Image 1 (cartoon, rainbow, N blue to C red):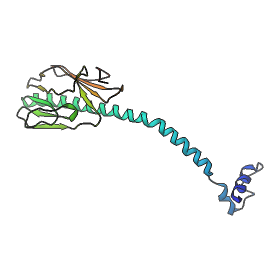
Image 2 (image 1 turned 180 degrees about the horizontal axis):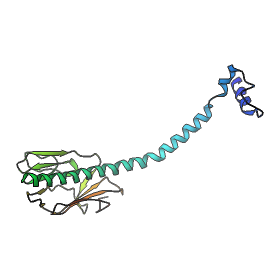
Image 3 (image 1 turned 90 degrees about the vertical axis):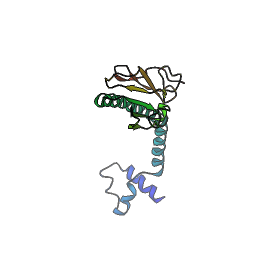
Length: 190
């Protein structure tokens, strides 16, 4: 009760300096926040966090999709340049290549492999990101390669989807070997 009276006295004085009428012993009682004020602020912070968390989770999923698409773009550039520099064929294999045999899906990761089966670079999978063909009808599992002349074995498109109606990324490469990344290109499965 005494603490409340001191606080009220600190707030109600209107003439001069409010600290003049307070002794040094009671000066500490006038500084700080009440428990009610702290609970109100904590409640407002909790409400703001609960509103922002779903949006942040969605954005993190989109960033995962972008990061995996960037990894594939890097793998394509690496594979093509190694094919031209080494005068040998180089493949991008989905999944984990076993002795040069490409078997798996891009959702499980992918690797840059030389024609003799030696692993050049391995790119791991990203949690929550699935890789589909351009129409979104099946998960992509075909390998693509480049010869020593720099020409690719086929045109190819990969969609990096995170589920739902979120932004997604695509990597498209033509036979000449020019890769590019596109946002919201193609249709991810729903």
